Length: 90
Image 1 (cartoon, rainbow, N blue to C red):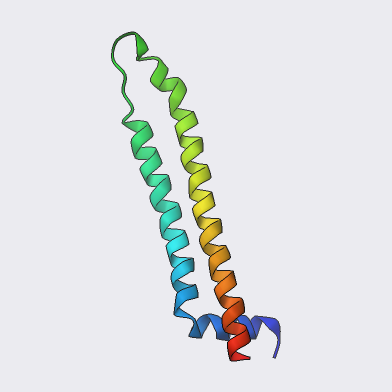
Image 2 (image 1 turned 45 degrees about the vertical axis):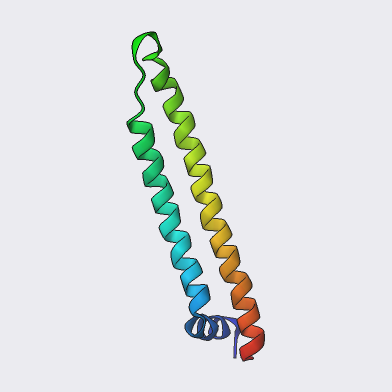
């Protein structure tokens, strides 16, 4: 059996790994949407109003970094679970 077949069989039997992969994707898009929502609704009054345009890209970049971190960490968790399950199954 080659490595790809073992990976697919292990993934088929491991619900925890599938949940980790799905949660990674969901959290990635959820954090990105939350960041865009918060950045677009950023408003300052008075003399600080132009400051919102300068801060908006910084906030978007930070939320993007957090989203990528969540995705990578969930996928690393899925990989760790898959390795343990592979040892158990094969």
